[in-house]
Image 1 (cartoon, rainbow, N blue to C red):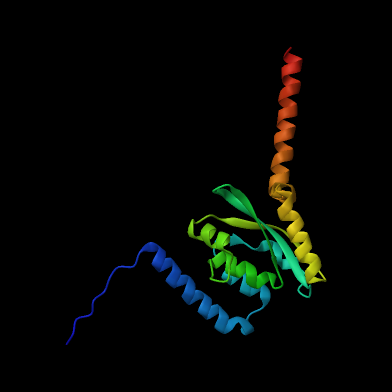
Image 2 (cartoon, rainbow, N blue to C red):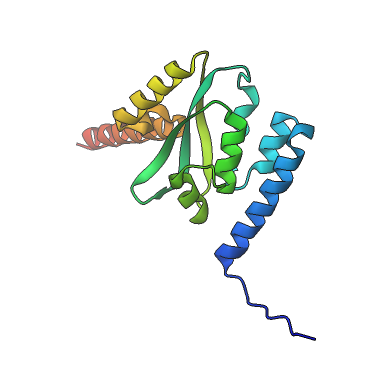
Length: 168
């Protein structure tokens, strides 16, 4: 009887194997689950809470993802899709159909949140809006989390200036 040779899987190989198995199960059972359940079950590192109120009959969606810590130079990801729940699930699992950037974010173990979803009746309109946001290069302006933080920093700076002026 021949012996079975086993080798230990690396952490990354194990993670990929688990993701693949989970995606297979989800894909096989997709028709049995509501979109909300599908999104919640598929949620790995991402917070998909914002998707609950999204118009499911839209022609396209543009979304902003806020990374809880920067990945290289980036703090945000802007994307377009026609199926928002499926796309977010792929992003959260680092699925092969996810973007290269979001797969790298997933491998790095960075948590993220969907902070903006805009639905469009026309897919072309959505793609134009996505390109406009990407050209802007200040994605933090479109992220409610960053906008709030920037406003708070501005308020703190103003209070500090007033204290220094009063102290004289």
